[in-house]
Image (cartoon, rainbow, N blue to C red; front, side, top):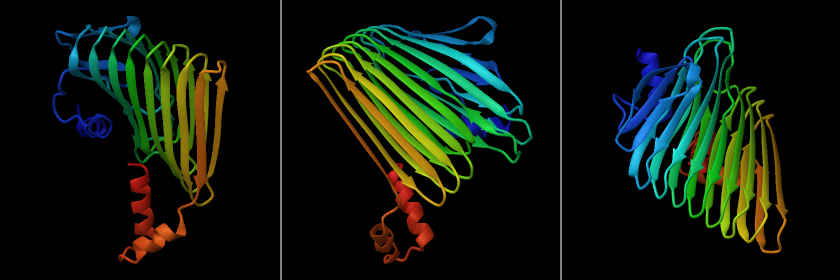
Length: 305
């Protein structure tokens, strides 16, 4: 791998050198490095279209890295990765995609990830998206995450997109059985004429299932964002969906939260707030010696932390 590859991996996965645990590194539509462990097996699908990741039951605290990097302008890479998490396993998965585009053609990655959690399984999943390069070809990312959770399983998902992605449509779906918990945290920042759309769709089918969805975003310049969420409470369950956005310049932000209760025992909450940075926040920081621009940067940094 060259210096561009290494920099992209550092940005999206904090990888320097050989990753800890099992890993699969994909570059320009092909797997280039792979390692398995005693408890985690990675099997390539036919024709290089993705991988199947098998985590044995009772695996405790192992890490899996599955980053994707694209450095070829004009490439569209579609990958299907399936994760089978065994009973009572606990695993930490770090994914994401980095695109470096120095030319005129668009580069695009569509990553479709499906998770199948057995009873008592626990997953922490982090997905980072990043774009860079001096070309006017767009850097496009369209991730899809589907989560199927059996009794007593838990999944925490953190999605981060802070820099360089021109267009993204992010879709997250969850189907939850009893005593499950699905927590989603999203952080997005757009600038220029970038577009970011997010869609959450969660079905709470099992008693005492719950989901907590938090989206924090900053839209600047002429960028556009849209947040949509649909939560269906079909039994005794709990859901809390929260969307907060800071808007600047000539940006546009839409928030469309939807909750549907199909049971009198469903407890569903949604909140949405869009607004500019409060003047008193700026004034307070500026009295400490910061310029207005520096104060804005500090507020945004804290908001997205």
